[in-house]
Image: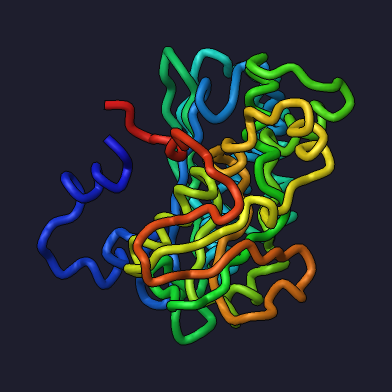
Length: 307
């Protein structure tokens, strides 16, 4: 069951709370002019027992920040839930919390509470973050317009390839693989683009479950389709080098997750801003078309529920 199907079946009910949840169509809720978001990372899924506790702390904070930035909101406060598993010891805690507090300071986040429990199995880490909405509206997934241009920030595909190198499913050049693994381990939320999203985007999300899957969220919520160019998707030097000798992995640039870059729609010319690339346009036909590639059997993005 996909996450959106789970929400439709078990979470959405006919009540008057939708004004706060935005219909459960976005990764945020809105109450009293504050936007709220939460994300959990789990051992053996989002991080591994041989990962440094310092990198795990940074990942936890940064994947959460990414959700609010994509709404044009700067997070200010957070709650931390810590489910301590088998890998945890005093040295792990010392390293983790030193890095955790450094990143809180880096992103001007104030920790105001949370909860701690212990488990005999895997470690689970959760952050709930929130910040004030400083414009009249929040940027949703559902507000894209016909003929909007589609934009992404940064480069796409680094994290997915890095994850598979880390899992030893892909072999790659030693120098480049370190950079790709680092991009998987420690996302770089595009905080500097918060105002660009707030002032210019018609619809927006972050890329956590894969470019196609997250674009489909915008399309389905906005009752539109999209045309994108594979060649226009920005790729890092390392990814370009990798694809030259591993062409069979091209389609995973579209479906691989964990980039935590921004995906948004808006007027022409927003690619004049640094770190922004135009990759396509919103259409009336309710499908996503890759105009310069004919990929077969495109895998869907990351599935949170494996039932």
